[in-house]
Length: 523
Image 1: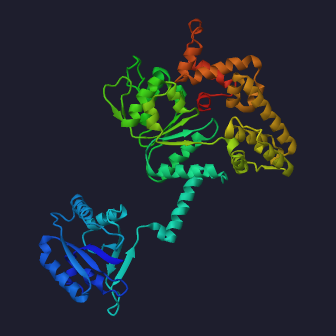
Image 2: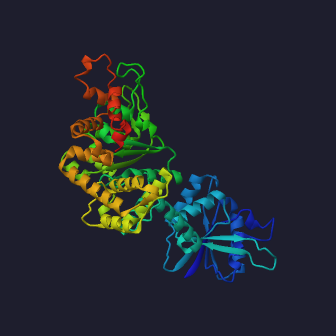
Image 3: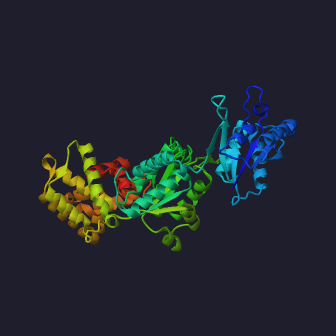
C-alpha cells in the first residue's frame, strides 16, 4: 500500500522565516512514514512558493512524487467557498483504496480549511486518516508526526467512555431498574439511539399500565440532557380533546372568540414550544381533531380559535396508544396521513406477563420508592417474599393492569405492614384481593373502570354508587374541562337551582370519593 498525503501549501510556515521547521517538507523526513505521493494544494498567488517547496521535497526524498493542484480561493476564510472547492476536488480525484492509503495534512491551511477537511474525512467523501505535524522539541530530534483515525472504535479509552454514557442513558430510560428481559433491554437501546439522534415523532404502543407515560418523560429528560430541546414536556390526554373546548385547550383561543371576556388562552401547543408534546391515548382522538393536529405537527404552525393569523410552535412529538392504529386506520377511525407521520419510529412496550424475569427488580424498585415516600424501610419475611414472587411469576397471573397493578399491589402491602415487615399472611390477603378485583372487573365494566382508577378503595363504594360514579367518570373523560363535564351532567337540574356553578358541584361530588379532575384524566 502506498501512502498518499493531501494538504494545503503553508504560505507562511513553508517559507520557514520564523523557524527552520517547514511542515510540508517535514512530511518526508520521517523514516517510519514514507510518503509515496504528495498532493499539494495551492493558490495561484503562491505559484512560486509551491514550485520551490516541490523542489525541496524532491531533493530531500527523490522517491516522493509531488503533484501540484491549483485551487484558487478568493477568500480562504469563507466556509462555503472552501468547502465547495474541496468537495469538488474530492469528487473528481478518483481514490483507489485497494492500492493506496490516504492522509490529510491538517497542519497547513486556514482554520476553515482544517474544519472542512475534518468534515470531508468524517463523511468519507475523502477516505483518509488525519495527519498532524509539529516542530521538533529539540534540534537533534525529528519533527513530530501524529496520525489520527476518525474511527473512534480504535481508541479503547474513548470507546469505553462512550459505552458508559450510553449505559447511563439506558438506565435513565429504564428508570434505574436493572431489567433482565433481553427483548425489553434491546428495545430500550433502540429508543435511546433514536431519541438521541432524531427529532422525528416517536410512537409508543402498549397496553394500559405498561409505563408509556413514564417512558415519554424519560425520553424528554434524555433529550434535555443532550441539548436537543430546552422546553418542558406537555402531557395531553387526547380523550379530553373532543368538541370546541378541547380544540381551544390544544390550540388556544383569542379573547372575544366566544363572546365572553377573559376567555383568551395560549393553548397546549404553545406551552410545548421548544419541548415535547406527549399525545397520550392518541387512538381516542376524533377524525376532526386528527386533521387539525396533523398540520401543526408537520409545519409547526396553526391558527388559534378566533385568530386570523398563524402562530408557530416547534416541538418534538411523542404519542402513546393502547390500540393498534393500523387497524383503526383500516376501519376508517384514524387518518392514514397522520398514521404515516407518527409511525416513522414505533416501539411496542411489552406487557408485564411477557417480562416476568423483571418482576423481582421492579419489586426492589417499588419497595425503595415506598421507603422514600412513606419514610419507613420495608422488607418481606423470607417465606412471604417467595410466595409473592411465585404468584407474580405464575403464567396464570395475567396482570391485566400491568405495572400499574403491580405497583399498587406492593404499595398496599407496604402501607399495611406493621413496623415495615410484610408477612406471609399479608401476601395471601393481597393475592386474594387481586384475584377478586380482576375477576369482578372482567364481568363488570363499571367495576373495572373504578378499579383502574381507585384500586382497592373500590371495595368501600356501595353498589348503589358504583354505576353513578362510573358514568360520571366516563363523562369527565369525554369532556375537555371540568366546566363542560358539569354542564353535561347537570343539564336538567340547572334550571331549578339558584347557583349554576356546575364545575364546583362536580368537583364536590368527585371529592366525596377522594377523586379530583387531574386524577380522572391522568388515570
